[in-house]
Length: 637
Image 1 (spheres, rainbow, N blue to C red):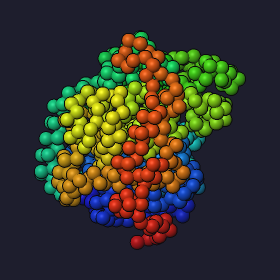
Image 2 (image 1 turned 135 degrees about the vertical axis):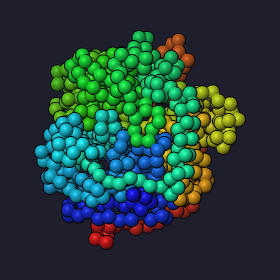
Image 3 (image 1 turned 90 degrees about the horizontal axis):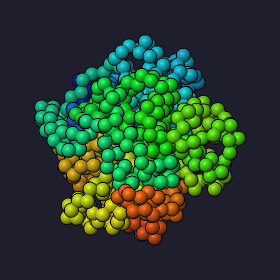
Image 4 (image 1 turned 180 degrees about the horizontal axis):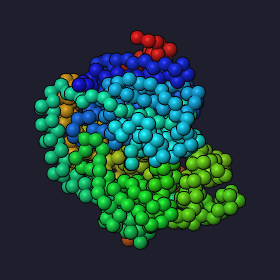
C-alpha cells in the first residue's frame, strides 16, 4: 500500500543520465500542498533569471496534487510546469485523466526533468522505479500512433504522457497529451518536453493508495459526490459537458466572433450542445469524478472520420465562433487534428482568426500566406494551417512561434488585431462587457488565461450580501460594473491556486456554483486523507503564497504592470452586436481599469507596479535565498 505523504520527488538529469529520489518534507507540504504549488516552489528555486525555455537548462516539472486519488471531486487533475517558450513567463498547464494517480501509486508525487537526452527517449515509471528507455522508434509518430506502440511495448496497464510532431518540432504552443482527451495545452509544455528529446512518459504497475482515515474519507467523499450531483450545475455538466455554458453566453453577447469583429452572429445556435447528441455514443470522466462531463462521439463523414471525446466549450470557441465557423463537424475534425499533432487548440483558433482578419483588412496578402486566401469559416484553410504550423512549413514556421512573435515579424500594426496578453492568446470570450473577466485574464501568471481566476458567479446577479460574505467587501452584482471586482479576482485566484495544488477539478469549486465545495470542505478532506490539520485561514494563506511566488517568478523575468492589460482593441473599439444583453458599443474604460488594477495589487500586498512588497514576501515565508542547487539534488542519497 502507498501512503501518499511518504511519496518522493524524483530528479532526472538527462545530461548526466542520473535519477535521484528525495523525500518531500512535511514543512513543504504545509506551505505549498503539492501539484501546482510545490511545482512553483521548485521552478522558482531551480531556474536562474533569463534561462532560454527551449534550452537544456529549463526544468519540466510534473506534480500531482496533495489529494490526488481520493474518490471524489475529480481528483485526477495534476500540473505540468516549466518556463514557457510561448510567453517567457511562468508556464503551467493543468490536465486530468489518470496518469497523475498512476504516478502517485508508484510512490512518485513530483517528477523534475532537466537537460537533454542524446537521443529520443521514454521515461518509464515502473512499480516505483524510474528509468530511461530508448524512444527512437517513436520519434516522428503522431500522438495516436505513439499510444499504440507504447501499449505494444509496455502492455495495456499503462498511463502515458505523449508529445506529437508539434512538440518534436518545437512549436511554442505544443501540448502534452494523455489518453483520448487529456491535454496539457496552454503555455507550450509539449515543446519543452520535445526540446529535451523526451517523446513519452509512461507509468505502469504500482500499489493501491491508503489514507490517514480511509473509512471516514470514503464516507465523506460519498457525501461530497452527492452534494455535487444535487446542484443544477452538476446535473447540467453531466448532461451536456462544458458546452452548456454557450447556452447562456451566446445570447448575452459574451463571445468573440471572427477574431473580435463582433460579439454575436445569428445562425451559430448550430453549435449548441443539444446538436452534439447525434454524434454521441457515451461519456467518460477523469479519475475520481462523479460528473463524467466528457462526451464520446463518433464522426463518420468528412475529411477525418474518427472517434473521440469532447469537444469542450473552449474547442467550440476556438474552431467555431472565433474563426466564423458554425459547423460542428468542422469543430470535431479540427479538434482531432490538434489532438493528433499535439497542439493548443485555443492558440490555433486565435491565430487562424487573426490571420483571416489581417488578410481581410489588407495587412497581409496571399504571398505572405504561401498563396492561400483565407475566408471566415473556411475549414480547408483551418486544416491547412494546422498542418503547416505542426510541421513548420512555409508561413507555418512563423506562426509556430506564437501570435506575438509572428506579429513582430509581420509588422507592429498587426499586433493590434492579436487578441493576446503576455504573448498568449485570449480564449473564446469577448470580455469587454465584464471587467472582472478582463482583469482576471490579464493579470494571470501564465498569460491571457481563464484558469487562474474566472468568477462566473459575476454573471448570476447574486445578492450583494452574499457577495460581501464570500469576497469580504462590497462587490457589485452587475457584471458590467467595476466596483469590488478586484476582490472577486483575488478570491478566486486563491481558490484556484489551492484546488490546483490539491489536484481537484475546478468545475467542482465555487467559481461556477455557490453550492460547490470550497475551503471548508477541503480542510476536512486534507485531514482525513493525510493527517495534516490546516485551518481555512491557513489554506487562504497557502493560496496567497502560491500566487505571490508565481508573481515573483514573472517579476524576475521582467514582467510588470505594463503586461497586465487586455489587448488595446478592447479599450478602443466597442461591441458591434445588437439584440443581445450587452449594449452595442460596450468597451473597457481605461481609467476605471487602471483603478481596478491598482486595487487588485493592493489586496495582494504588491506595489503599484505589481511587484510583491518586501513585507508581503516576508509574511508569506518567501524571503529565503535560493537554497536548491541542482548539483546537490542529484547527488545520490
